[in-house]
Length: 357
Image 1 (spheres, one colour):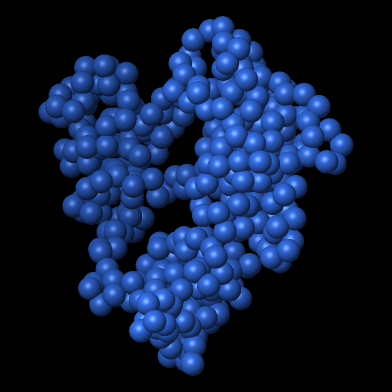
Image 2 (tube, helix red, strand yellow; image 1 turned 180 degrees about the vertical axis):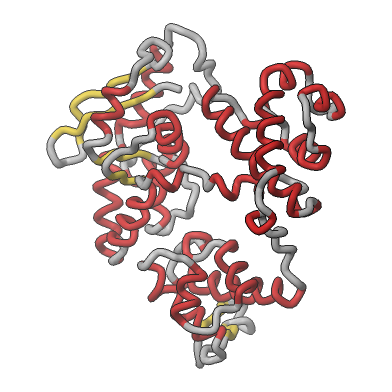
């Protein structure tokens, strides 16, 4: 990882200087993190960068402005590259010759440094241009709200009580085995964070369910699992056995419930139907559909079938700016008060329309 920092100059989108910080040379970044925590950070596709800061330092900038996210609200889609956005808004063609460069080699070459500088040189100009467009569309507050959620550290902290639900094969386990798996998942996550290594290097996913099923009493019992090599058993064997012990003594009443099975065909059809409306509203407003309502939110509705508007809002769990745009029409549609129809099919320009003709 290399950190690039552009320092703004004045209010016209210019920059005073760019600093390239090499974490291989500067091991302690605490002063930088503290400085960023006191300001607004502008960047492109910031989620992965912010997750690193949240994981490593448990601290995030005071506020952020993500140019990729802002561009999505301006009709550019969810994944426009920095190169394309700079070309369209700043009328500059960036050089991307170093995309596949070896960034582990030191010292960095002149071309690599130029590449890193270009990555941040135009961010403030993009911010100014995007804010102007967002104001014209009346969407600036929407973006501010979304960016505010990006700077919320809880977004990057996994719910420890639900880590086990991400492990493939959990649906095959009984409640006691799920209790053991839950303790294993928490222990594995802690070990991976402590060592700054991927989860699979602590315990592979496909071994987690096996451990929960055999419930080893000693480190020697782990030899039954072929996916646990000698290195894993030697380094994490005691941790695994202790996690299993904790899972074994969870009171029956506190054991995890069996995971909800897949939606029935009828409820899966309900999700698909709701998604048609979401897509129609997204197309009408030149927005990505997943920005309005993720499929997971629609699946919650299909599972729980909330019967009042307030319960429906709580079940969807969407940000306030979405309510007028998507929540109200979706509720009226589910209540049978708003139909969906197709216009323009005969003319070769089909369009899904919400409401009466």
